[in-house]
Length: 345
Ligand SMILES: Nc1ncnc2c1ncn2[C@@H]1O[C@H](COP(=O)(O)OP(=O)(O)OP(=O)(O)O)[C@@H](O)[C@H]1O
Ligand SMILES: [Mg+2]
Image 1 (tube, helix red, strand yellow):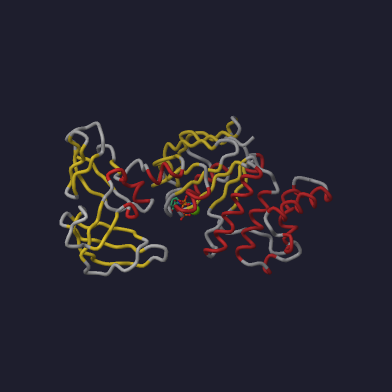
Image 2: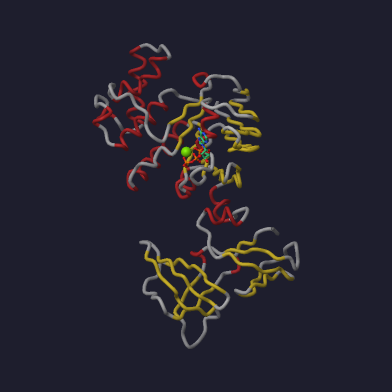
């Protein structure tokens, strides 16, 4: 089993409240990402679950039992730190087997478990190497292996991939995903990288300033952000104001059919993601879109980011089409079904 329940968690550093009234459930066998910007309180929450820090309020339950006062080694929740803390005088196998030996497990059995984890984390060839003979990515894999071998109910991963280059990071993500689906281990994975969270987890919990702003499936947070701040965190741009009248959203950027909605007449914020806006060069015959002029273009590899000045203001557009240039006259179209309206502020 590996059921984690965090109830009304409060954590203070001195007089400063860092976490306030936080509730989060991570179900047995689930992979949840705790996503948030630097300083949001992600590490603080993991430490509280691991037992490395005393909360000032609330409760943490593992498999239905409160772990208040339970020391870290008895919690069955193991934390992998952002910077691998390995024993420099031990080789890879000895590092991985350390926790098992501390538990008093016999040598033969420890060796068998270590071999299994070495294979799982693709470290077989490195078992006799010393820590200083490993690359940063290999060290992170050893740190992961050392936690996995203990078969914790809950694995707490604190940005374990943050020091890796893009290719290795992608490989490690896939490795963690494979391990998670093979072992069905409950994992709480901390990251500040939205694409990492979306890719890796069953559910994402977005933490801003010590509060969970939205918890849900990756697609839910990405396509249906609860508020403009959540949308912004996921790369949302193009926020504007308007009001609903009989199923139509009226704004400076146009009138859009949005279907029946509550709050006729109230001011509502809307957003449209840059990749959902269509852009074409302006021709003599209008395509029916909004007229605008390109202010700047930024090539980003798989897409180009374009800022378009329309009479109502600027729109940011992301397109895979090439050939747009600053100063060019264009037309942009906002598909009404891609418009996201937020509840009244
Ligand atoms: N020991 C401490 N004493 C006082 N304040 C602390 C302590 N540790 C962290 N903080 C503060 O608490 C807040 C949350 O810190 P935390 O380390 O949990 O953030 P984080 O989300 O993990 O950030 P990062 O992504 O940079 O690792 C920050 O404002 C930080 O400065
Ligand atoms: Mg941190």
